[in-house]
Image (cartoon, rainbow, N blue to C red; front, side):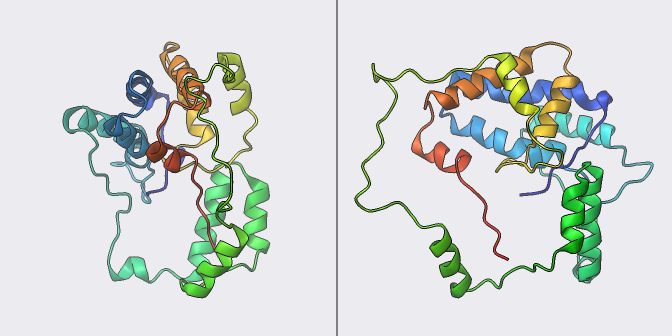
Length: 235
C-alpha cells in the first residue's frame, strides 16, 4: 500500500477526523463487516497519503479535504500517490533513495532513525527461494502439536481487559516519533494529530470502543490475520 505521512493541517482535520470516526463506528456496530474493514484499511493510503511533489496548487490541507469529499460521494477514490511515472521515476539511484529515507525520518522528528539509516550498510535481500527459506527459519510457523487457543467469546471464565480513554491516550504517547503504521498505514502520530484537531470526543470514543472490541476477541479469523499480521523486510 501507499505510504501515509503526516499529511495535513488543522484546516483538513475536521473532515478526515469525521470520516475516520464514521468508519470505526461501522466496525464497532458490526465487528466483521468486510466493507467497513476495507474502508479502514484504505483510509490511510487514500486520505492521508502525502504527494511526492508540492507546489502552490498542491496544498496538502486542500488535497485531504477534496479526497474526503470524493470518498463521501464515490466511496474510496483511487489516489495517485506519485506524480511522476515512467523512465524518469525508474532512474532513481541509490543515493536518492537514501536521501529520501533520511528526509522522511527527519520530517517525522526521528533523528536517531535518520542517523541509523545514514550509517547502515544494509541492502534489500534478493527475492528468491533462499531468502524465503531464511525468513521462514527465523520466523517459523506454529508447532503441529500446539494446543488450540481457547475462544474467549462466551467463556464465563474469561473477562477481557478493557481500556478507558485515559488508557488509550497514555498508550499513544508511548510511541516514539516516526513510528511506522500497520497494514492500513495509519501511524500513532496520525491518531494523535486527528485527536488534537477533533472538535468533539466522537473519534476518541470510537477508538476506545474499537480497542475494547479487539481485546474482547470480537473479530473473526480473516480479520485477525490482517490486523495481527506482520510485515517482514529481508536485508
